[in-house]
Amino acid sequence: MNKGYTEGKNFAGITFSYLEAAKGEYENCRFTNCSFPNSNLSEFNFIECEFKNCDLSMAKVKGTGFKTVVFKNCKLLGIHFGDCNPFSLSFYFEDCLLNLSSFYKLKLKGTTFKNSNLEEVDFTATDLTGSTFENCDLAGAIFENSILEKADFQTAYNYSIDPSINRIKKAKFSMAGIIGLLAKHDIEIK
Image (cartoon, rainbow, N blue to C red):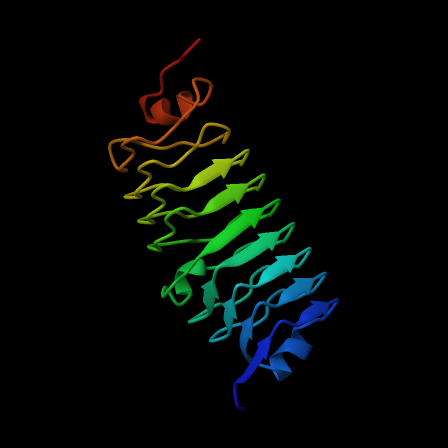
C-alpha cells in the first residue's frame, strides 16, 4: 500500500481501521475523540499534530515518527515509545494516562508532562534534560541511568529517584518531595 500524505486535516471520532487505510504521513492534523487501542501505528509519521481525548493504549509504534506532537487528555497506556523513530522526536503531554509505558533510551530533552499519571513508566537510560513533570504522579516509575539534569520535579509526587545511579545536577525538587530522593536508604524523615 502506498504511503499517503495528509496535511491540515481534522479527524474526529475515527477508529484505527479508518486511519490504517490511509497509512502514511500526517502533518498539522488534529485527532479528536479517536480510538486506536492495540493498533499498529508502526512506520506512521506525525508532524506537528495534536491528539485530544484519544485512546492509543497498547498501540505499536515501531519506527513511528512523532515530531512536535501534543497529547491532551489521552490514554496512552502501555506504549513502548522506545520503539519510535528517534529522529526529531518531540512530545508534549497534558492530562494524560501514560501508566506502564516505556521511554527506554530516548532523548526527550525539554519534554513537558503536565497533570499526568506516569505510574510504573520506564525512564531507564532516558535523557530528560530540562524536562518538566508538573503535578504528575510518578508512583513506581523507573529512573535508572537517566539524565535528569535541570529537570523540574517541584510539583511531581510519589517518585523514587536514586541520585547515585542518575544524573540529577541542577534538577529541581520540592522539600516535600525530598523523601523520593532518599527512599533507598529506608530512613524516616519527619
